[in-house]
Image (cartoon, rainbow, N blue to C red):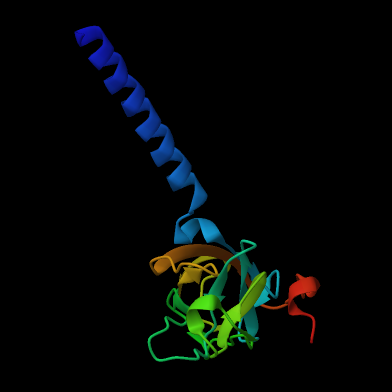
Amino acid sequence: MNVTLARVFLISAVAWALIAEVASSEMPSGKEVVTPAAYASAEPAARNVPFQIAVVLKIRPGFHINARAKSEAYLIATDLKAELPAGFTAREVLYPKGTLRNFSFSKDKPLNVYEGSATLLLPLTATDAVPLGEQHITLRVRYQACSNEVCLPPVTVPVESNVIVAASGAKAAHAEIFAPR
């Protein structure tokens, strides 16, 4: 009897462990839904010549994130912040226009979202105070990822960017990202 009870307990424990593993593997975390990458519009970036850092957000199929211009007060807008080294100046972040989509949870009110990918642009200038050579800029993106059924908790993810600063001679880079649209 004890052997049978032990087998039932063992089989139940294994079954619950498998169910928990399957359930956790089906729903990713917010950090797993979006893959951010940073690109500079100039390599090198020249002092006193404006350039941009683009943060490209690749969004997993089947998910979206709220656009910067949110459709409802309760939504969490996508937000980009920068920790700039001394001597860099920044202007306001440029956010793309979102796409209005209807979801089962939003009834008849379309929501302004980013799907697939979104590119956030941070205009910068390196002043004469910035040392020549490689400079490290930490960016932080805050967003809330949702599927058609569920919204994940909001997350803030770091995005690292290295910019090479030169006295002059800025060269355009990453034309596929920074080309006029």
